[in-house]
Image (cartoon, rainbow, N blue to C red; front, top):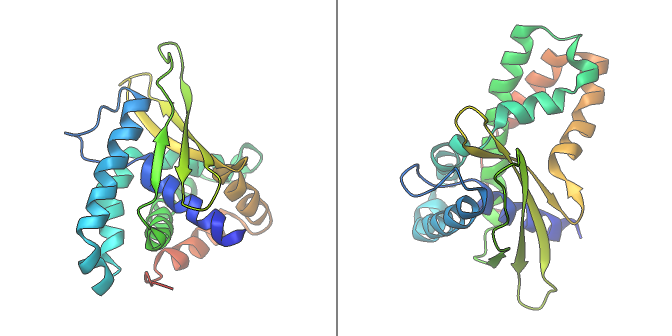
Length: 210
């Protein structure tokens, strides 16, 4: 079950938030997700020989293609949590956001080693004119397995009207909520700088195929 969930995460991250500014309409959360999925799948397929020789290329792809479309600051502050906010400083939060970004880069890049070119179906577009947060649903089709339902949480910037992904829910589990539950206790017990340093060590890890 754990391996299956890891594969789900890999596919979800691939589908959710990648592409160049010229190819994605980030003012429509539905077309954004479908368009970026196709662009990302193609890039990973095209660069597989180079990636196999140097897995660190995956970090470059994540930085170039994913991070501009991830609201990592919002996600990082959610992980800190309201209960811990008052015991942190402006500088410690800024440091955490920066490190959390690189932690996501490494985490996503490592998960991408599981990419197997599975097929993904996208739900039809719904009315989102008045929405600030949209859950875009997809189904991952893996031969020999039942369809896996994945929902992407995409948040609208009310100033620019652009959408960015910040969370996904697979098998009823929110990745952001899980990360908040994992780290909020440590932040409360040992302080935000301690958790920041812990994540920095993890973000420095090399990408390997297992």
